[in-house]
Length: 296
Image 1: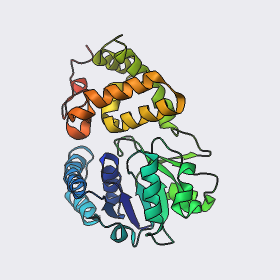
Image 2 (image 1 turned 60 degrees about the vertical axis):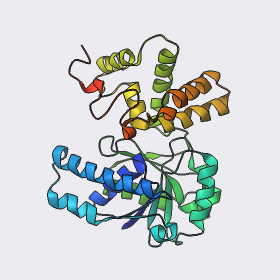
Image 3 (image 1 turned 135 degrees about the horizontal axis):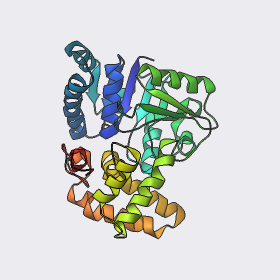
């Protein structure tokens, strides 16, 4: 695989694109929104500076990555030569289904489709892809180059050869593959993480402790870089809202519904989307939890 198309230029889409381009793949970033594409270009400049300052990347390596990046709002143009697509469109089932119908009618027969969905298993979308044997999940954590796992999960109709090819691709782009052998909502990372975030949300929204105290407790006790509310800022409030709403609808969990509404009212409606907007529970780029005094 040489030509990769990233479908969705948001937080993770822009990161996946940079990681793949940095490792030598020709990457086209697609988004229906021209503003999102401009934001992705700006983020790639930020990632370039970060890679030089923190990951030992040379000027030549960074320029090589930029030379392998292209951007377009034309879906047909984006996928016309794609060997693999990575989809990061909004976490809403009907939106994803409609998108895959369009993608199936546009992409070449050779193209492998992967979804980066955090909340859906590939079997929920396979019928809409028009090529279920070439469709599976390739799920990344945030930030991609620090939490460098790539969870590979097929569905019952995924071709084993395709599964293995995607595992190999994830290695080639600098990730540690996490093969998952049966469909599991939440994959491995979110199956472990979701109970933590839910418990933290219960403590905070029920008035048991403030979010900084909860984060401090977790960070001191486990040695983690982030507490659960720092993680929520990383994941992004819009994703947190969709995850909570999905849980509420699937299980009838009224607490999840209340937390989702609180996230929308207190954060999303006020433009506090997490790290991507510069503010969530914390303000960025220098959140309080990174202060040397935070854990005292």
